[in-house]
Image (cartoon, rainbow, N blue to C red; front, side, top):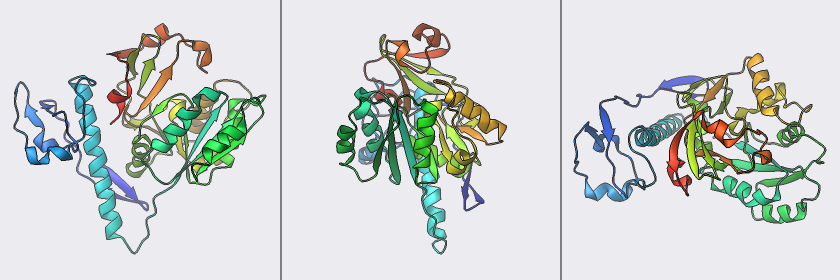
Length: 330
């Protein structure tokens, strides 16, 4: 793996993913130490250093499946730790060159008042600290004063309005024009973005030369059947032509060249990605964790009108759960 800092690439030792190992864990881990938790296949028991248990991340074994799911979770934690430790080391070694952490403008467009708490919650919970939120209300009867009152509890949230006659693409372009940071991240109003979502996405820009980062593989929660599923397991940690529109994060210069189309009600995300590819921008898909597309019973409430049963045919079913956040949050 390589990390890019100020145009230079620095090497990082890759994470071992050999197939002849499996991960053993305890209920009260607060820190993942791969060397302590790797055992040969079929080995039943492992001794754990009790004095270090308080430092291990909490993992509820009832909420996560065994095998690949668990291994991938632990691999992600290790990758995150090693990458951020290496970045910090190089930053410390180059104190004479001030390496500023880039800011991110999160944009959300909504015409649904009922998702107000989810929108604010997703933003507030992000551990990535240099951020702002720009909300564009796209329905005329939404009380903007109520939203501004909520936003006043923070110092980095802006509430805007665009007439409901304007399509989603126009709302997104409007929000982008108000962004002050060098990276822009699109959040949907009804989905789940875990606390490390934005940090992991921004890490991808450090060790790739991608212009756009998102998730090609991601979890979907079908509310009516309480089913958690995942799509496109093979589409992770690689360059791609597809990422979910609700996970687009890009350098600001991308939006200076490519705009969201305004001639249609739906499909602006799809056309945006096509236009980015045509302009030779590189797209990278991160891992599948820390994001969930939430499907409510009425498909007509979604921009993509596909029925649950049709979407499930293309997914791997994880299981029936009432609390999906415990499974996908890493």
